[in-house]
Length: 385
Image (cartoon, rainbow, N blue to C red; front, side, top):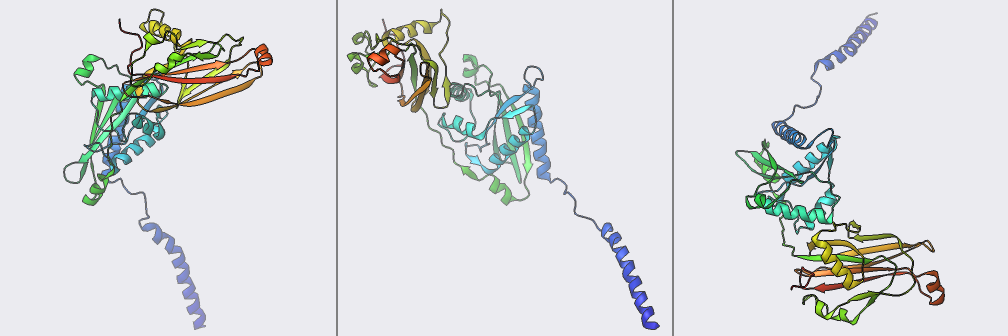
């Protein structure tokens, strides 16, 4: 009987152990969510302060229920992109994305805005540089909708701290002569000291990952004219007198292009694009200064619409255009590379030819698009008196 008694005793002990083990495990500290580090606490305070400043300045439930924000990677004091600056911008972007009152500009568009200004990083800007940057963005992406722009600098602070200085710039604020002369920007500053756990971590956070490159992009004037009445544009011999190294030879060219005399019909659904832009005919007041200049150009080139007239970076642009032949319901399209030169004006002339049914049958005429470009070493059209 003793072996049986021993066996029963052992089983009893095992049973107790099985019962006791859960209690013992429960008594042990289980892994839980770690408390925020000093670095995370400081970063959270910075992000919260920046969001609060954005909302206080720009958010209005009635007039502006959604604030569109451009968040550029933060840089060091020399405009170089650094690891911590990129990380901070990405975290700001993610946090704003999660809030319904904010809309954030895509990274692809931000890179395009930098490129059109000859930059690859967003360093500190004065009023003049900001005005130039904003003007080009508004010209080449007029539907950008940006209301606030967030930029910033990161530098090593005391001990193992990262000093962060963020700027919230009003992208819509007027910049007149007074503001430019006195370097006045409508901006808010948010600063923070974020401690890093080790000197090595701080060193890695401030290492350059994108060296600053900035090149001055000289500008030229680009004007896009169009004849949308359906006629051919006939080129006169005077077109040979135009060149990028000489002013417009108006005295030698009473007419550069003239309308053909064919029987035509109006083109439908005309579309004109310039790189990423969708262009529409410009409208202007009857008493505006542009009216005289544009009337002069229409007389010289046989056109009737102005689709674009701006100072833009001197480079090559893709011009695309199309129209619908209402007779056959066919779409005709064409494209061309348009070159803008520094300190000169490029005139791109479009003509949409849509022959009448009689012209198609009798003279075998077919619809089509003509694209011409001419140059003049000046930014003005009207001849000086």
